[in-house]
Length: 260
Image (tube, rainbow, N blue to C red):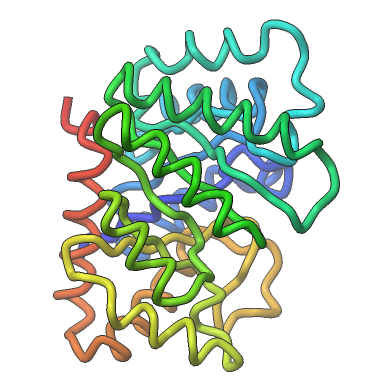
């Protein structure tokens, strides 16, 4: 059984003392692919370096919406350059966030638009962070779709079925993290059962969102994706190895530069 953690912050300082063992445990758990996702220009550079260090790791480069206010002159240009680096297979994470008041919303919109345009220029898929701003995300994605096709994923999805359907119609994939396993997340699990088999992904968002029954484990790590896999396979009434193959193949298809 091969697994794909499509979103982990492997560069996070929570892993600094134990990163080799974290990757080794992931491999023992069945991970054959792990996407290290950047949140700033420097974080993105670290993800590229980690992709060069570990065979199962690929990188995504970008500036997360809560960090764009801190972006220095030249940071975006560095992201653009890193997009051409070996084993970079995606852009992000990007998106919008109305929950945290770290960045003026107009600045978030500017950087989300930059990522979307760069995706359409390079063919690299984008990774969308969204918190309490579904209508804004759909507005910008719809505008981008008018320029051309979209390739991307709604990461750590927590929206409703209507939002999921709208994102699917725009051509996106939907990814679920540990939150879908929480006891209070019955509605989200119901949404997950409605995602087509060829458009669903799984992730850890490590070091955050440890899944049930490991919610007390800090930090979360890629090996724990087996619990999200088991939860969603049961909810979707498919065998775990079948669901593992579906999500692995979906990840390979979306992040197709991995095969180059």
